[in-house]
Every structure is written in C-alpha cells, then in structure tokens.
Amino acid sequence: MAKKLGLMKKIYQLYLSLSKKYGSPKEFWIKWCKKQKTKQNREDIALGAILTQRTNWRNVELAFKNLKSAKVLSIRGIYRLSKQNKNLLENLVRPSGFYKQKAQRISQFCEFIIKNYGSLEKFFEQDLETCREQLLEINGIGPETADSILLYAGNKPIFVIDEYTRRLVKKQKIAKRLSYSHLQRLFEQSLPKDVRVYQDFHAMIVLESKGLKAGKQTSSIYARKLLS
Image (cartoon, rainbow, N blue to C red):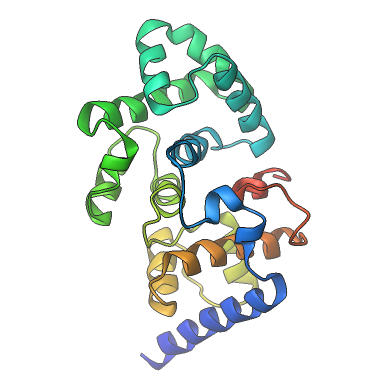
C-alpha cells in the first residue's frame, strides 16, 4: 500500500511539475482541450482519433481536406458515402495510410453512431462505461482510440495511455508494469477526477516526451504525431 501511495505521489508531482513548465495546453490545442465543443469539433476529434492510427497528423489533415472538399466531413456524411461509393471514401482517406482499412473503420464507427443514436451528442449522453464498452466492440477501435474519443470528443473523465506515457513512466521510474489498464488505473487514482486535468496532463506528457516547446505547435492534441 505504501509503495502504491508513493507511485501516486510521483504521478501527481509530475503533473504539478509539467503544469509549471508548460502551463495550460488549452491555449495551443483549442479544439481538443476546450471545455465547450461544437458538434463539428467533436466529430473531427472522433474521426481523427481513428484516422491517426499508425500515421502522423499531417496526413490526417490531408484526408480531412479531401473529405471537406467532397462535403462529407461529418459522421452522417461519411455514413452516407460509405453506402453509396465505398471506393470514393477510400480515395478520400488515402493520405492517412492503410486507406482501405481506415475507410472501413470510420464507416463502421459512423454507422454505429447513426443507427444506434442518430448523433454523436446522443451517444455521449450515455455513461462512460457504456460508451467505452460499445466503442471497443467496433472493429479497429482499441483502448487508446476509444479513450481518446471519450476524453477529448466526449469530455469524459478517462485518462489516455499511449506510447509517450509509457516512455515517460519508464524514464521517471514511476512504474515497472506498463500495461494499459494498470497505468490507466494508476494515473486516475493519482489525480483529481477532472476532465481538464486529464486532458491537460496527457497533452503535457506529449510535449515533454517529444521535447517540444509549448506555444510552437499546431492547435491539435495530435501534434505528437507530427514527428512520429
């Protein structure tokens, strides 16, 4: 028990240290970290969380540009296009890499939202556990992607664990066990259960892991992908 309390204290001290060093990332990642999000903000974040798998954010932005030009940059728009012209959807998301796979994944995600809830806003009215369970049932959406959608698009209090978090934990000798579920529990138990704290801390971990300077990056929380 004492060992666990020591680890929790280390994590909270790391949060305070990074907060002092970087300030609030919401000034630089407005869409992702702001409290009040528009419908388009939420949909962009959710779709981006899927498209950014195994690629950099610059490529996702190119795919977004294609989708916007085709007037389908929305959950409903992608759902309709997936039923009408699958090949066109694949070509639109091609810049994000693994385009056939990703076209299928965003199609399944959009179909799930439209058929079961009608909108992303309605989906997020469900409790956190229900939302997470249902996202994880969608092919291609794992814990990191699901939790990114929930934390940043849904403003749900769940901490995202990614490779940068694991690297920093290892570097700071915070924990030896690096499994997703273990680290997520450890971080959530160490911090106030607050969406803004989770969002900002995760963003600051990215900055610290990349050795970047706050204020000089893009307005996306996925700026971490730019140098991947």
